Length: 584
Image (cartoon, rainbow, N blue to C red; front, side, top):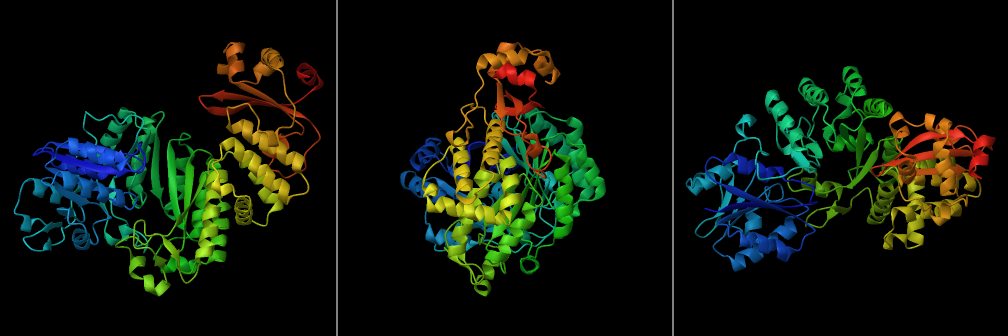
């Protein structure tokens, strides 16, 4: 029998864990092929590729982002290859499988719940009526077999990334060391699975070593609360730290209020870029937190997150959800300002999706949720927030994504938000309105263009400090862009001839301020990766002193070294008459 497992990932760099679990679980009885696609690929192309494999059975892993495209592919495939049996699995078909099969007659089977054992029994051709966790077509009706019990011993599931034919170099790998979650959040599907089950710790270490050896870009742990079991999670992180792999990042979803001082001391010594934390805040409104069944302590969360922030070595992504019960527009503004005060590397604003099987979906009438019963089931409004307000928040979310999350405007934003706007939320709200007023949401913008737009917005709103703001924007631009062509709107008109830069890079004092490895680079090569900028003010008063004092009327010069797409500020000093003479 020819068996093909497939899915449509959101991006090419992603890998699907579920179908690899299924393949690994049956490798001793059946050779299974895997073929992954993305939602951005042409539907006809995907269908043709599946068809060319001529499978007897094809299974698709389904989620809210790919269910519509998957069903289109299945419908077309059944038309041209009616003998091919089509199997669906995944969260998007696990909660109403009978209805899905009634609406889509080209689907032959649906696995609901954990799928490894069900899939194995299906391939072993066990009597179909005895395969728990399976929905299938009987002689004259759709039959839903009893629910399958959860796998008690996760070690019975083989490592899913052992296929020597696959190249995972520079890919994002999804990995789990546990299943289940200790919390019962009403918006999340993990609340429907009770209890926590763990892989043996020694196995996790071995498998992480294998992934490190494959040269993957990121290992993204899908454990819903990675640090629910302190000793277990710490042993994993300590193992990674001992291995100290290069050019790889480990992403964990953690609950901040469970982190203690001992763990904070450990995090302080982690190499920069090795770990990345995603922390679900969702809301800081106590009534909202209670309504969604969430367990949290925001004051402890804030304290822990700010300490981690002070270490400057672990990126933190903090999440908020728009549309939760009791969270109106004003309340969301307060939640936003609360987490903004922490200063995480990323603020992720999500919009509530009433997922099949979630507690909030069953309570939709109580909270007045209005939503389209079509993936991704995002709410339009509820009793507490209007559609008009959600539209405004979508604009704010886009501003946060463009201007905050990439950190390309960090110094400018820190200064203007702290000095000229009532709150961070009000800044992004006004910036979004500026985009609306000028039709800027309708146009695609390069990163360079965003600097000019931000200056135009501040010029429109402010009557002073514009010279300083222009210099800060110019500093941010040079710091974060390898293109030396300064956008017109923020160019101060000061240029330095390349020959002068060459002369400066030969100066003994300048060279002494560079890292030792850069001093050995021939000047001509150093010149190609170097930007030297002259500022009308002493930019250090704002970049390094926290913007607590006014600018001194001292010009300053900076050297930026571009290395592999990143700009490293490697030398800063005030211009003396000697160096001013040298470049003028």
